[in-house]
Image (cartoon, rainbow, N blue to C red; front, side, top):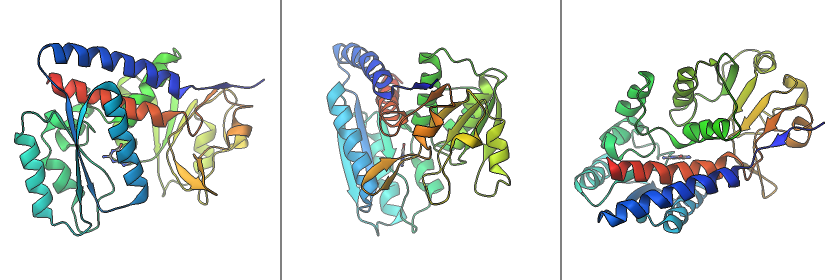
Length: 281
Ligand code: GUN
């Protein structure tokens, strides 16, 4: 018996259809949703992510503004750009692609974004609201994972959910979202001792390590019928891969996301959804 391969393309198509409907409504009211992105430097992976985000925006009718800043941009200059975008009524969403260069402060930069335009749900205000169970703009990957659970009618109440990632983009918002659905969340990271033992008690495992030299999740590490969500993307021999040993895991798990075609397209669709929410705000 094998588990179900989660269809990220199908879920993202469904979300994009809803977004297109909302955009039609917005346009009929004279509002053209617009997302401004800021990319510092020329990290190849980040360039690809940004390009994909712009393409997806165009597909559903969201206007985009592309700011590419040099690696050595000063904190002052990026702050000023964000302030200008905050003030621009025609811009509804602002996304600063991470990671930033070492000379910039992530906290100082992100904090500048108006919470109403924070389509990544990364500002201290929006992350703080999430801890109170108030969801306005929520990080795209974590909210996309909830879309997966809803699409497949998976209840997470009372389940042990092991999350392997503690970033502001993934682990921290996920922790609060899962908690708000009454899951028992075990948040793991690079200092976690005996990760394998913790994985074994996971009814659901959400993994986002992205380094297959350090970590691969395989069949003997999971409980039978566990649900496995693979958020990671790394390149191996020119091939996109996640954290999961897919061919082995699918024989033991009840559901597994593939890479590519799993969480990735849903994350992009959630960015489009957040941009329309921001346009409504
Ligand atoms: N870097 C990798 N993924 C993301 C994302 O979803 N948002 C931002 N801002 N940076 C990223």
